[in-house]
Image (cartoon, rainbow, N blue to C red; front, side):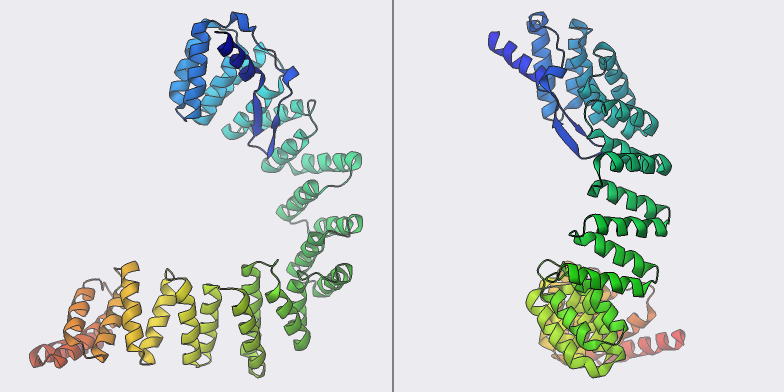
Length: 458
């Protein structure tokens, strides 16, 4: 039993903690853990304890608790047993029992960091923020890192006055850091204290002029408050501070567009669209703003085409293809719209709206073979969408595959519910199919059904 006893001691001394209240992780100093003498750990105790650890490792927490209860009977004053019980109950989300057992561990070995961290988490998850705060305050004596836990708890419980006082105190003692600045700004945003938000960001820029995010945050606040002049001034200040920055053009292009400085706006947009460090979502927003601008200023469509080509080279985004297709559709360039819709579909078949628009345009532009092929794929993904059966049936009619058209239209008609306009389209396409099949009676029958529905709809 010598080897197992040694491992048992290592486990007791190697307890680590992690806090769900904040992303604080780290090993607890070995000297802080008082352990029951290994000579008192009987073979039976060790067997149950190791089995508990094994069961917890495979997430069988109920079984782990049974084994730990056996340990408790053998050593009723062992703090680590109650600590492990508390952890298992916490994992089962039984926070009442988790707290009860962790409190027992704390009474047996008072003010141990490893126990207090687990208690803080359990209080937090139970919703007892006040007790979590008191525990975080006790933990600060062990390590100043727990100030972050305390600050987060103040924020989550909306004790903003206490939080700001704490942040002021820490800033005065330790200097400003990004975590506290971010938390302070969240408080101001939550409480709509815009003036304080602006002042904090100004101070942050003054203290740390080499951090881009401070400038961008201040630009955003100014813009949201309609303070365009101030926002533009900070943008220019940022460009001077970071002459090679591409991120600043996310703000600059908008100001240039609003000022009708199209040349500079296009220049800024090109920089944004070429920048690898700028995410696709931001690029889509830039291009969307330019689409709106060109819609109101058609003379700049050639510039738009250049920007589109640039974007297409850098990003393969179905969302942008859809936006471009819709833009050209509004401007009645259906062929160009279809080109972009098809590019979008090539990389994202799960977008039903894009699928539908593509198929309808393919029909309208007499691309029947393409519509037939795409509608087959679309029906495999969306098998209960009647519009897809209608489009496929219409394409088959155009290709004079009347028997297949009759079959797919009849099948798809069953999915049409409370949509009289769509039923009219189905009846008319069925009439065409039966006419192609030489069935005059069915042709007339579906024509009459279509006409009756039209009259009812009017």
